[in-house]
Each structure stands twice: as C-alpha cells, then as structure tokens.
Image 1 (cartoon, one colour):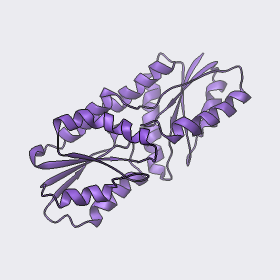
Image 2: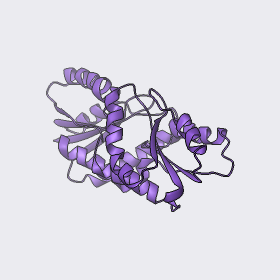
Image 3: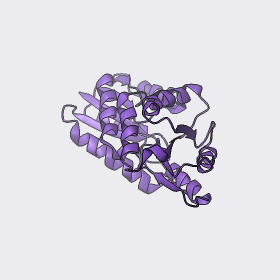
Image 4: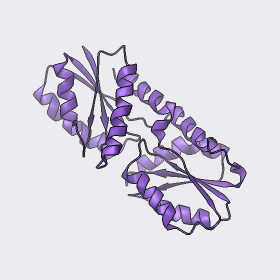
Length: 240
C-alpha cells in the first residue's frame, strides 16, 4: 500500500507548527488517490520523521514516498533527511522507500511571487521589490532562488534578492539601500512557506529602521497562495 510522508522543517513557535499541521491536514484531505498521507517535522516539533514513518507502517504502508516540504535543496534535503531515512530503512528493510524533491525551481513558484507583488495593489512603477530568502552558504541554493525570481525580474526591473542568514546581501542592507534610493514604496516578499521566527525577524527589521515617509509592504507567507499546494502536489506525483 502506498504512503506519502511529508517532511516539514519545524519551529520553536507553537503557532507556526500549528499552521504547518493545518496545511498538511488540508493536503491529506485532497490526496484521495493515495491511501496513506502523513507528515513529520525535521526538528523542533512533533511528530518527528520517525513518528510519521512508523505511523505510515502501522496503517499498512508497504511503500513510502518521502517528500521534503522545503523550498530549496539545501543541507537538510541533501544530508539530514537522507541520513534519517537510511536509519529508518535499516529498521524496516521490507518497506520500499522513495525520496522526492523539495519544491525547488518551478514556474508555479515564479508565478506565486509575481502574484504576491501584484496583489499589493500599489503603483509598481514607483516601487522597489525585495525578495527575502532564508539564506545558505551553499551557492546552489542562491542560484536556485535567482532562477525562480528571474521571470519576476523580467517584469519588474527594480528588484533585489536578500537573505536573513548565511550569505549576502543581508535583508537589512537591501532595505537600507532601498530606503535611501528614493522609492516611495518598498515591497518585501518573504520567500518563506509559513510565518515564524524568520518572518518576525523581517517585521522587527522593518520597524527598527527610519522609514519616514516611505511605504513598506510585507506580503504574506507563501502558504497562503494556492500555487504552494500545487507545487507540492507536483513533487508528490514525481515521488510515488
């Protein structure tokens, strides 16, 4: 029997984990063609990956497709999750295991970002757009985000990509540059699935600076857009 196991990152904030769980339960309800759909958190929350894996088996799964519900192929996707799956596979050698891809580079995510910008309903000719990624020291992660944003940049030339950690330019530097560049409006698009510690950091950074007569708009997390779910479903189809 086929099962799908989604792996989310996890958060210290209970509200953020509850948001992720609600999203996963919506996905469970929409996968009527797959008998078993479970989820687990990589860290900081329960159920764990092992909990989700064992729940699939208890429900009769003989095949488990593990799909990382993560945006880009960084260290968690390449190292941490595979190491845990090797351990679980050794405990349950009879289970046929497949490992899917994170959301990654897809036109659905490029369109999602475009929609986030267009949904602000401001004069975009006088606006600067800042895309804010989590950040990573892995150049491949930065390349992936650049590729996702490329179609957006072709529509809106006044756009920059910044990061919260791990690489440059930092969000605070990009925001300061935009504030001093004469734009009347700055649109901040967090490239983050759910609200949490990182979205709070974005809010705190904006409120800590001297905005004066500028308008700074922060768009909602990506999970609020239907393309987030559609992009995830594409990865499930690849994995099963």
